[in-house]
Length: 281
Length: 313
Image (cartoon, rainbow over the protein chains, first blue to last red):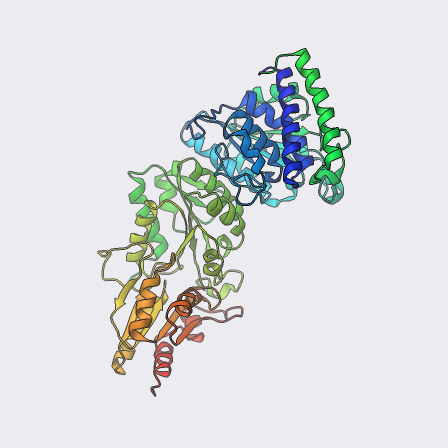
């Protein structure tokens, strides 16, 4: 998919996830909006995945370590055909498979997450297995920035560099907000790039809502042989909905009817703008 | 007297199995020496992963390896593995259904004089509460061998706890049928049943002899698998012998005694005693000294049995 089509797709996914959250009356809205562009780049352009063969041995692996922002992932997996789109209506309902965190009973989900600081270690294991088997697949792990305060992230960071896992790509959704406020107020992370560099990773810092930058960065992996890649995706929490952008309260705010309509109108206008200028699908 | 510790048996068994199963992987957290896994690391360097002193990481990485078709055996001190990484065990192993074998080494009070930080006498309680994790404790080197072989062929998360030092044999050889979840009736008896696991099985067998001299017929059950629990063996023992004693190298809260009593009170209420480590930081000392202090001894088991049966010593 070309850049313009990816941008339109990300806009459509934002509309889908907002409707899903409004319908369910629960969800992590801000973080899902901030990582939508990252996931769109991965699932529609970068990763080798086949919805018809979700367990294919050569598939690329994806672990959503910031499991709470699963809404964008559910919307994308449904759109890509891993499961029927109608199932999105069951999100967070009694007995649903589509719970508020990744659930590997759903095709396309590799690992159950939700407890922060787990995903990268699991991704290290997957990437290490690929090296042992001389398999070509890559492993991607999306983390939150608030999650960087978990010590287990850094245990895994050490192991990824120690085992020279250049088939491993860590991504940080650096939106600078967490539930209690800014990341720097809650527990200062900066200089975060330097920390990852010091841990032996090849760090690329980009605008994480810039589709062109995302695609170029992922396509250049591994930029450094023998080193895992860390993509510092500097994003805007609540991206795409003007009144949700950079507002901590939208971490798990559920839009009311008026907010939903306003958000969908903004996104629909953006979608049409992308569509007119380029092909979608 | 046997001089081979169970950890060495696990290493030897995995060395044998790895000859024809290249998916077996052993992971260590700077613990290859204490886990006796040095020979495995040397023989199969490509199937050995060192993670350093990082118990959360060892479990997470193992889950990722298992997800990719490997059969990881995590070997790490029971005290750290069962506590430091319990959330990884819950989420990455149990909840995500990955085929990870967690081998807690130097378990119970093996680290004797090192104190409560190094004792693991709550591990069975926490593991048992997690759906999807089997919990096992082998009684001697023969059972350790058969258990390890069974684990290689078992798909699912398992926590196994072993001690540090060599223990006296309770089986004559490894020529017996080991089935996960199926208790072994070590001695027949009709007056009382002692249910033991791990290193306390030896103590229970000695108690059987001591009670025999006193004219008491004592059944001994080796509950090597604490989860899934062999409920039928417990109910049968309660119905046929009317008195149950459990003995474990674990807190009296949440371990073997608790597991057995959950079955007993709901199916076949009979008098029962739970022998183990009380709710306190365990006293320092060698395993035998600590066992004796807390009544994990054949003489105390005899005393308890006689008391239950209303008999004088």
